[in-house]
Length: 256
Length: 320
Image 1 (cartoon, chains in turn brown, green):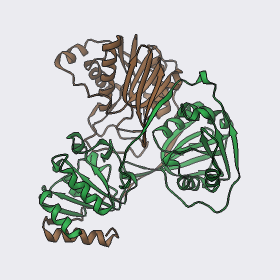
Image 2 (cartoon, each protein chain N blue to C red):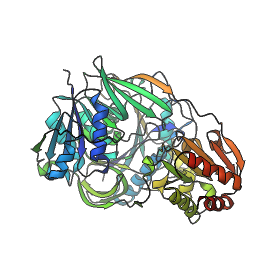
Image 3 (cartoon, rainbow over the protein chains, first blue to last red):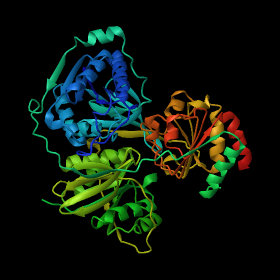
Image 4 (cartoon, each protein chain N blue to C red):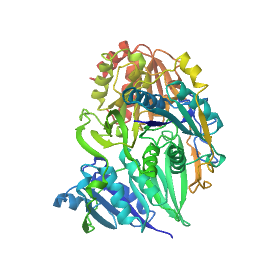
C-alpha cells in the first residue's frame, strides 16, 4: 500500500443550534463553532490502523473555505501525514456532485490505493459524496461499513443497510465510507498537535485543478420555518395525579 | 436537450419497496408527469409479484431481470438504468435509503444531472422540476427547482397508498452485466434483527424514549415495558446510547433516527438540541424528568417532575 486518502470536512458543532440560510437554502455554516466532523476521527483511525499493517502515507483532503485549514491541522494531529485543501469562492454552497468533482480532482493529484471517508456528515447528511468520488475516479466503492478489513490487495467489509448487514468485498484501488461503529475516534495528543503544525499542507483553487467555474443549477424556491412549539405545556409533580393525566392524554388520542 | 420521462425504480424484496409504498411513490410523482415504474430483480417475477406491481398506478411498468442484482446490486442498478433510460428520462427516483441515495446520485452524475434527496412531493412547472422537502426533522419546509435541461436524480420519503384495481401491463426485459465489469460483490448477508412485535421507529405512532437518567442497561427494561404496553417503538437519546444503556439503532436525534410520532414520551432525557432535532415535530410530547428546567421542557406538552423509578410503577399500575 503506498497512499491512503482520508476525506474530511469541517462542520458546525452538532451540539450548537443549527440554522438554515434563507437565501441559499443551505445549512447556515456560520451559525456555530466549526469543528472537524466527528465521523472523520473514525475514518482517520481506520486509515491509521491500515497503515500500521500495510504501510503507506495518509493524506487528509478537504473542500472548504479558508477556515477549514484548522480541520486539516487537526486531521494531521491525529495521524495524517500531509493535507490538501481545495478552496475557491465558486464552491460556496456546492451541492454533492460539485463537491465530489472538487474532491476527486484533488485526490487524483495523489493517486491513492484507498480513499476512506465518513459515511455521512452531520450537516447535509446525505452520504453520497464518497460514492460519487469513486465513480469520478473510476474506483470501486463500498459504503457504510461498520468494519473494514484489508489483506494484501483484497478489501472486505461489513455494510450496514437499514434491514440487513452485508458482507462485501472488492479489490484495491477503492473508495470506502465508514460508520461510527468502525473505530473509536482518535484523540490527538500534545506531540501530535505540535507535529501537525509542520506537516505539509497544499492548497488548490478550482483552476489549479483544471475544473470549470461552478454553476449551481438547483435553486431554493421557498423555505418556511414551521411554527416552533410554544412551551404551553403543563408541569406536574410525579404523583398519581400526573399518572392519571398522562393516561387521560393517551386515551384522548386513541392510544388506550 | 430536454428529457421529460419519469422513472421510479424499485428493487425486488427491498422492504421499502412494498407495492403499497410504490403506489405512494407513483402518486407523489404523478403530479410531475406520467410515471414508469421499473422493478429491478435478479430473477423472473412470480405471477403474484407481477400482479401487485402492475396495480401501483403507473403509466407503464417494466421489470428488468439482471442476475447480478443478487451479488452487485448497486453497480448493476446504476449501470442498467443509465443504459436503458439515460437518453430519454429526465427524472430518476427511488425510495430514500443508503443504497437508494447512492444509486440515484451515481445516475445523476452519469447523466450530467443534479441530485436531490428526501423529497415528499414533486411537480413540473415552467421547464423546471419542483421538489418539496422537510429539513431538520420537519422544522423547515423547503422547495427547490431544478431545470429540465439537466436530469434530476431524486430520492423520496416512503409513503404508502392503496393499490389500484386497474392493472398496467408489465413488460419484462433482461440485462446481463459482463462479469469482469463488476468490481464489488456481496459474499454473505444477515438480516438485522429487530423485535418484529414493536413498530419501526421511523414509522411509529407512539415512541417511548429513554435518556441518561435511566442510569443502566437493566433499567432500560422499564422503558421497554412501557413501550410494549402501549404498542410503541423504543427510542433512546445519544447520551443513553453512548453510556451503553441502549443499542445505537434506537438513537433518536441529529445523528440517529428522526421520528414524527403522534406521541413522544421522554423518560430521563434532558433534550439537547441534537436530540430535539430528531423528535420535535411529535404531536404530543410528554417528559418525565427530575429536572424541571430540562431544555426538552421548552417543547413538551406535559412535564412530569420527579424520579422515573418511582413514577413509572405508578403509571404502569394505572395502565393495567
